[in-house]
Picture 1 (tube, helix red, strand yellow):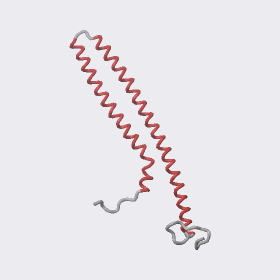
Picture 2: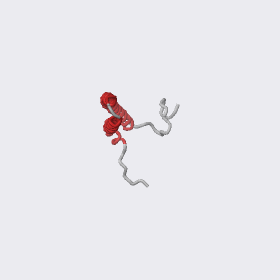
Picture 3: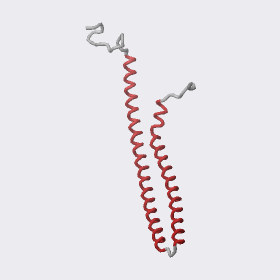
Picture 4: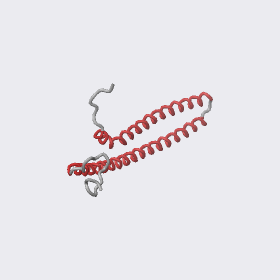
Length: 141
């Protein structure tokens, strides 16, 4: 049996915790519970935003695929109806130019949508990260 009776002291403590310390510990548990709830809310918000953005990406890709297929079919029909080699070459050149321009426009649009997805996915955590990390007070060496 030790000095404090039946209670065994945790390692590193030389005296029993005071009521103030126990109250602070309980306050910390309340903070942890609150933080856990906030993080769960942030996660659910994040999942919702991500699901909506992925749905928009899938719709956009589907629309682009459909438009590309129709364009390919129309170009093939024009190519088969060409009466001369010069006309066929002109049709093929126009098709290649239009296909490239449409692809670049779509790639730009998709990359912007992906960047917006990343922004929205990070947004719920931005305030929590800002609160958890103290601002730098001195310059790095």
